[in-house]
Length: 464
Image (cartoon, rainbow, N blue to C red; front, top):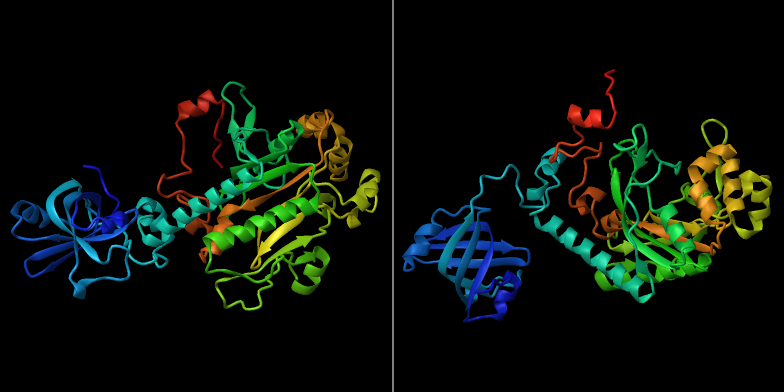
């Protein structure tokens, strides 16, 4: 007999069904034993009566979180026992047979309630149990729906989803790289991607024109409460576009996404307001302004664009560094200044950030597609020609062979979901996150590795 999902059982009153799941709650009323059975789709009340001695006797041992398979008839509940709060609240399962598939020890943490009051180390150590709670299960289902919505939208817009490498080259892109030693080339290393930035631009050179990816990004940054060493971007790039084209597409996508999947949310203003960087800093003292008219309304979404960013800023050593992305193009009216390496402090970039309720959720720009312009950016940053060639020669070479004008954007998927689901941090929308200081208590990572592995990689650990 096929297995029925619990949410579908209410459609089969009077029929015999087989269901599987976890014992959610066990109750006894007189001689009748009840359990609430839980699977991914919902909860069903199950009834054991003494007249069915075999199943009834076996059920006496059932405890919460045991995994069982039950066969029986779906019947209507008595009117005074109807539960309107759940999808199966008008029916129950009258048991014919019970099979215990797996027993469970007492759980080391409670999975009832939202879990916010439980210590992070405990929740992360037993994350596979933590995920059994309804809130987190729902978050992951919503995450799936959001990704599917974006995929379907971009597919209709003519985008192709293309994977890019996880093992790549270490280049200065703003954050510290995670590096991976090469066993076959002792002393040489791969880097894990901080973003697919260079690869997606090379896909534009290749003529793919519209690319997107649900991309893992990895950055070895200092611990921070709402930061993860690995996170997910909704990454996209387009050829033959200007700033307006990218912003229009993303704004349309975000509006449809909210209206379709989060109908309880209200977008404060459509089209999204645009604020230039200088005005944002003057009025809000931040380039991530929270422009909500009512900050107590949890379902109010105040999107805005921030534009006209400075291209360069001074670093700690007194030299120049990029504010966002070294691959961005200067605004057209500043292209001559860039090429002449003058008026540097006033050059504005084509960067555009999308902000939601005071959080930057995404950023992008129109890119430098001419090699001489990209080279000038790195020269302004103080890199010598041989270093530019070593670090970015592959990009400069590619742009010599007919590179189209192109631009794109990347969202922080985890942050978008955190805001849409009213969660306090991104760990609540990631299946297996690290703690705030980058540790995995469940897998006990990072961990030491075998001396044999280190020897094969020609690596020696020096104790401080």
